[in-house]
Length: 311
Image: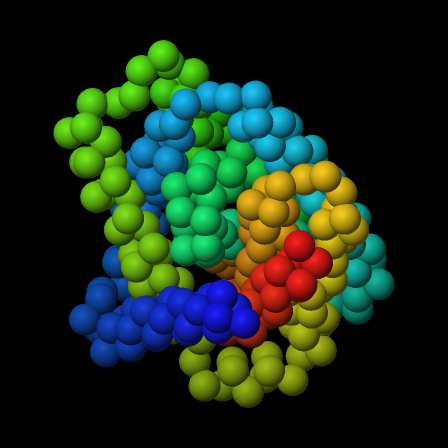
């Protein structure tokens, strides 16, 4: 019970940090350009440092086994989320500029920001390491299928865009560090740790700033849209349930905790960004990000409680 309460408390802290970002953007302490700046800082500086620092550990057979499970669970989760998103989109009666956004909001979770934050809060550096491997296929997926889902216009994505994105590069460097017969120098490790730990507050400030773009009129219209609540229910409750049966298999609790809780993360801020780029409904996408981000403060501790109950 103490562990569950502690996680709920930490989730509330994350929400408060997001609220600070929301207020700072509303009163123009953060200018409109800050969303791009914060995104670049987190994606290209703090998060890669956190990944590389967390992968500076000694390789072992136990670790190899856990990584194998993580990759298998990642593929399974992507198949389940893709199938669910496709089926719900086919059943929806939405205009074309919302259909792709609706599907993407169900499929693509905020694993890069909140996923790493939750894993770090609960499991420390090993949680970040496991999240990096769980996200390997997600990183390729988000730069390919997400474009197709939102744009539906045969957009071309180059191999350079896929292979040279910061998540893939950082995970590759981290893997090389992990298989080296020695650890990183303490000074370099300290620099990576200090920069990497900024990922958590900066990512939540960014999310709050992104959500500030919803105005009152949009809010009244979108809160009554049932498809936003369908997407929210699928993203936060249905999709993580696909992984629950694996709790009764011989897999480590840390592996299952990372897999289930990262899958249970809210809709990614990437979705409204792509919606804006490819003429999707940005307001619909942003409001879905808002509802899932706020409600995950309740649902993620519930799944953590279920993990503890079974294990």
